[in-house]
Image 1 (cartoon, helix red, strand yellow):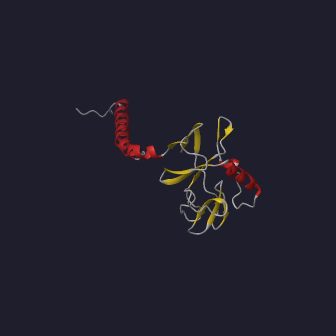
Image 2: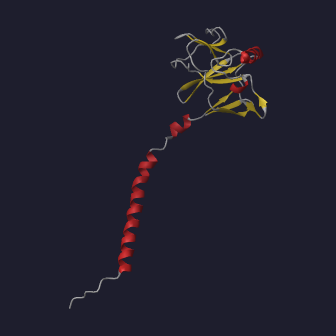
Image 3: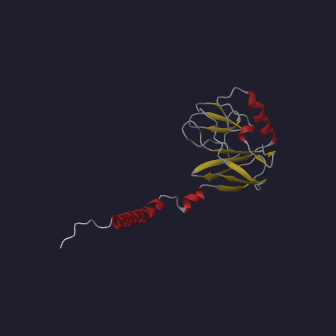
Length: 183
């Protein structure tokens, strides 16, 4: 004798819901390695920040460090260089920015003697001269890009030449009075 009564609908719903839940879990377990492989590797994360000890840099000296594959110019400016940069705040600047806006503070004390800028000319991406004592520093005693003749002052501001912007200030902070963390 054949039965014409339908099977239990609650049993069918349970099987459908269980099957869908298993498919969702399986899809997530399959996709996780793919998503995880898109995270940055340890060597890339290590390059995301650079810490620099400023103690060995004497006044008037400049060093170059690398951050994210770009040169970073760190200059321990003399009092005369800081004074010259502050005096030029009112000059006719193409990219208007005061010297105070280009330096950071540590514990509410301005560290105006330290200038940290990306060493990449804003015209076509050349590396300007001015880090070595023997380098040509341009008309404003900062940096000079010999490729196209851009002159930067002691605050890294464009003063003459085709560059449209100042040397960029990378994201950095003072970790202590003698250490900075870039990035």
